[in-house]
Amino acid sequence: MDGVYDILFYSQPNPLSSKPIIKINDTEYLNIYQKQLPTALYNLLYTTLTATGKETEQVNLRRGKVILENHTREIFERLFKKSKHLKVFSNYYVNKNKEEKDLLIIANGNAFVIECKSSRNREPFRDSNQGFQRIKSDFKDCIQKGYEQCYQVEQLIFNCPNLSIKSNNLEQDLDTSYINDVFSIVVTSERFATIQSDLGYLLNKANPEDLYPWSISIDDLEIFLKTLNLEFNNPTRRFAEFLEYRELLNERIFSRDELDVCAMYLKNPSNFKKICESSDYVVTDPLLQRYFDELYFAKKLRFNVLDF
Image (tube, rainbow, N blue to C red):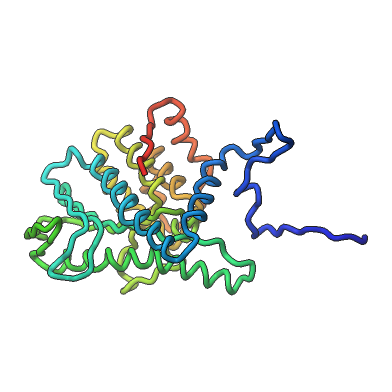
C-alpha cells in the first residue's frame, strides 16, 4: 500500500504519558489517562526547570540534598520515634573523612547506614547495546554510588571500636561494641524496577561474600514504613527482620516493584522467611500491592502533601 505511516515502537515513550488530555474542540477535552496526570505534570515541570546545565544542577541539588534527604530522615524518625537509645546523625562525617554522608541511625543495637540518591533513571535507547550502557551508567551514578558510600561507613563500624562522628558542628564518639548488626540502605528518588529489586544484576561488591544493601524508592519506602507502624506493635524489630531476610533474595528474584516484595512480608512474615531461606527462584505477584490499596481506601494509610 502506498502512503506514509507513523510508527511508534514499543520501546519509545507513549505520547499520552506526557500529554494525557486530548483537546476535542474549544470547549471539550478528553481526559483519557487520569492516573498519569501527576507524572505528566512532574515531567513537564522538570523539563521546564532544567533548560540549561546550571538550572539542572540547581534543581537536582535541591531535589536531592534538600527534599529527598529531609523527607527520608522524617520517614525514618517516625519509624524509630519510640526506640530506646536512639541516635540520628545527618550530613555527617566519620573519623575526619572529608566526604559527607547522608544519614546514620543507631537504634535498638542496630546501625542503619542510609544514602539518598536523586539521579535520573533515563529512558533507554532502542539500540540494545546503547540502551544497556545507559542503564548501567544510571545505575552506577545512583545505586552503585550510594552502596559504596554506605559500605565505607559499614566497614568502619565493623572494624573500629570507636568512631568520631561530626554532625551539625558537633563531634561525638560512637562506641561500636554495642552495635549488633549493620544495614545499608540506598534510597532513590526514582524507581529502577528489576535492577533495583535484584541488585545481583548490576551491583559490584568489594567482596563476593559481602551482603547486599537494600535499595528502594522514596515513595515505596514511605508506604512500607507507614504500613509497618500500622500493622505491628514493634515496627522497628519487624523492619530489621525484613532487611535481614530480604538480602537473601538478591540474585534469585524477579520483580519490577519493591512493594510487591514488601507486601509478601506483610501478608505472611513466616512464609516470607521460608521463601528467603529457600534456594528457589522467586517471581512476585503484581496483585500483592492490593494490600496497600485496601489500607489506603479504608483511610488507614494517609500521606501528607509535601511543601516544596
